[in-house]
Amino acid sequence: MADLAVEAVYSYAGRVATPDRQPIETRVGGFGGVEGLIDYLRDRRITHIIDATHPFAAQISRNVSAAATATSLPLIALTRPPWTPIDGDQWTTATDMADAVKHVETKEKRRIFLAIGRTEISAFRRVPQHHYLLRMVEPPATPPSMPDHTLVIARGPFDEASDRELIQHHEIDLVVSKNSGGAGAYAKIGAARALGLPVLMINRPRLPTRREVSEVDEVIAWLHHTDTERGV
Ligand SMILES: NC(=O)c1ccc[n+]([C@@H]2O[C@H](COP(=O)([O-])OP(=O)(O)OC[C@H]3O[C@@H](n4cnc5c(N)ncnc54)[C@H](OP(=O)(O)O)[C@@H]3O)[C@@H](O)[C@H]2O)c1
Image 1: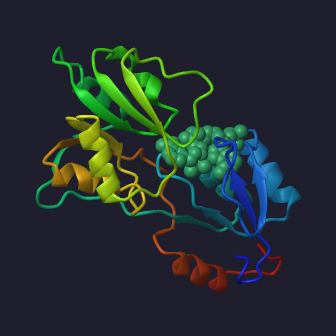
Image 2: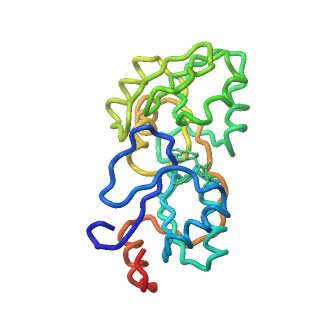
Image 3: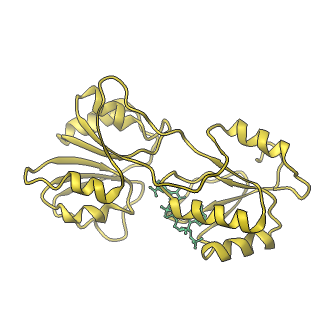
């Protein structure tokens, strides 16, 4: 956007204390639901909406779709295609987080790399018998409640060789992952395959139907082909 000299605002949810800097105007924090978002879009005279959030951040995507419909603003989603298993992968699929928890309700103690981010880890409190390897961008405000865990603070993207090393060092026997797609988070999946380990892959949440592309160039083409009278 900065290169295109398009007026644009980048909206962060505010989950990370030190987000990456952006070369365009940045705002942080929720809008106050759909109504708050509609007010913001009108106040700022926004003309186009690009939903480039994480595929599991379902609430903001639902809010954005509803607000785009209510304001008749054009909306495009920039998403990473989901990963699909290839030769050598040993995936079990979970429909959502609750289903993933059910999959590890076993008496047998496992050593799990729970690579699902910070916000939903508490779902696994119901299965405290396992050892959990947790990786987070920043230290959590309150320590994870699982009795047996190791916390690693690191910010991606990660590479397969170091994830292989991490998995081996912690003697992991199961990787639990969201199907986020993209290259930066794929390292653990490739590492699990190389080490012959199973992966419990959590499917994406259902989102409203919207125009969806996977390349930045497609978003730029869309911007050029829709009315830009007032800028973005
Ligand atoms: N969920 C995941 O698995 C996941 C994984 C990796 C990264 N992330 C990142 O973490 C952030 C939030 O994820 P989440 O799971 O909390 O999302 P969420 O459940 O969809 O959103 C919860 C609330 O956070 C606010 N919000 C979310 N994204 C926002 C944005 N870009 N700008 C302003 N407000 C936003 C909204 O508040 P109001 O209703 O008040 O507007 C929204 O209702 C996103 O930026 C996402 O890219 C999420």
